[in-house]
Length: 359
Image (tube, rainbow, N blue to C red; front, side, top):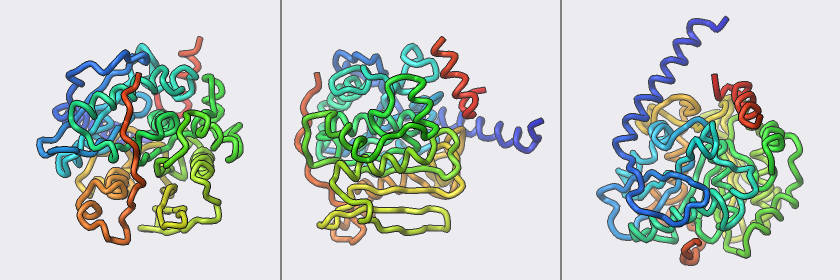
């Protein structure tokens, strides 16, 4: 029998998630314009702060399974941070007719290739937002959780020329699955390929040959939904793309639980970093004490705000954006201008229930 304390905690988390979702819904709006052929039939929500000004940065955020744009934003606080610092936030949103559990289809071949399916829909959405809001195309970033994290990696792999950097939270490497059974195996950390093969999958996903986006990988040490082996595989995938050896790493520890490993090139640029949170399960790390975001299902208050850390590393907050000479500043390679883009359900639900994602 589930202890009463656990039940109360669960209800409190659900209530917090519901409240944060309602709060976010007041900020996010449906995209008010068409954004192309939309072959993946993906919806879109957007937040444009009143202080966006000319040439704002753009952050693309992809929610996880069973989540919506509003619930993820309310938990993570991206729109809240954007309102303070003047960047635009775009939330592609999965439709239930595409996936009954609202997961982005990061494992479907037709949805993860360049100029096809959900990947192209997200690309078209980004292009429309860039055109409508004169976005600075050198400052386009993407992040996501779980299936959204895997889909963020799809976008980084298939449209690398578009992004300066990305952050993958509890996600998976690009191209490791092409069916639901394979996806479930990879989530358990089974059958992952070597780093050289994984890097080759990214390099074959487009004709791009650099510069490549910087990648930040986040993982909880007690994630029983997406095994930590996927985070290490992601590191290997992107180290190979950037041509860096595993040995070029530097490790730091913050607050006794936040381990950060970085890999630097000869110029001091950090193309790949790995954030491991001790004791954290499956979800996005947040810090309610910081006043940013709110705890809820898969929004885990561990005293570390990934949103704040990621935004800081991308130069979206004043501490980094104002003083470009600071040692902590990550100066991203210049990016070229974007080019306009042209019985299974039962298996999924069983896997999600076993992972605690459904009741």
